[in-house]
Length: 360
Image (cartoon, rainbow, N blue to C red; front, side, top):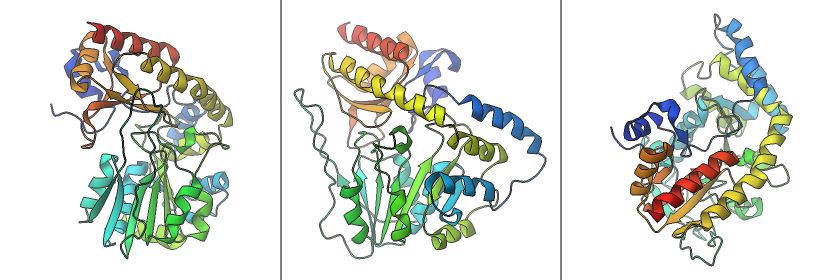
């Protein structure tokens, strides 16, 4: 079985660990460990009564609710079959530019979406040198001062896999320099409103700005596939004309509406992450040969003095724990891994297992 390009491939991991999928503890996919909110599960169960009818092709109720959530007219919003579908249409738009500048290392699907439409990519590598005495390298946006004419920019914030969060003030000047700017904010929900650096509020002022959001990670719904794009209505209408009808199923619609209304779950998640992430980071720093980055989201990138392929295999075979290797990021290779922040007991189990394997 081929090595996976994404996290969360439990079938592959179970084949290495020689155990059932249900026996694995997954640190490779950055999904909220609090689980799917009970309010969302109730909405899904209730929504089964609607399965005999097609979804509303306009998705008016969902767009209205998302619009209220972000204080935007619904015409600015397009729900999608996960943010992956919407990234495909963003790739089609970006491919029409002469070049697309891409911050690397980058989520593998960015390259897929651009190459599907013969887009031309100009990589802008981050400097990832990290020393034991540092918490985090300086990760300034490595973009040209004078981008090529008719060029695009594809950026995710917080950045995957480093967890780096750039401020609105750092990004906004580039909206004046690029013909099209697409910002993937898949993990922005994990920041409190006071911490958030989302550019959604700028969309009405910048017709060249597109924001992609995911509901699957924060609300633990990766199997349901639901995300949305925010852009000017003319671009939203164009994307709708490109895609298949009924891209979002009825259960995903009712789940999304229930999710964004669950303020109690949102606060619980922020409270958990506030202490769990720094605690896990410090536990990893205490292990000889590991140097974790100081991320802003619900995952940590870790530089390793040891082969990550070896470490990943040992964790699977000995402890049924799956970490995310970074072999699909060419800039990182076999000396970096990414782990999701989970509940304290799981985090402690991972730290104990890594310590034991390295000491062996």
